[in-house]
Length: 153
Image (tube, rainbow, N blue to C red):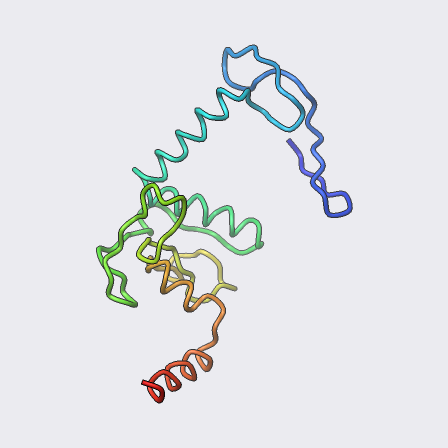
């Protein structure tokens, strides 16, 4: 399926047809490749894989982000190691199962220098909280916040 943007709106070139799942003869509309039963099945399978294979899920999402941003990507599963504790904050890394999203202690793949992309030596798994703290702050801004907190407490 090719993607096309027309005046800021996504326009699908896909035609209505038959479910893409092997052996399924259900008809589907233009917006979907699978019938509703198979969409639910694949969504459940993806959710299960994210919970049981977090390194694979991190790698897959990082690869998508790198492609979208046009940055390099050369990681393998061996390059993504989830430690027991966050190397930045020292909190235990645990996945937020059933919460519908990441929690502060969830493992998160961090790029030290985002412009270099997801390449070996430029990534580490840290807590989601630590990644949010440093996501768009400069070192100077972080030092100013630290100084302010020290003065006010």
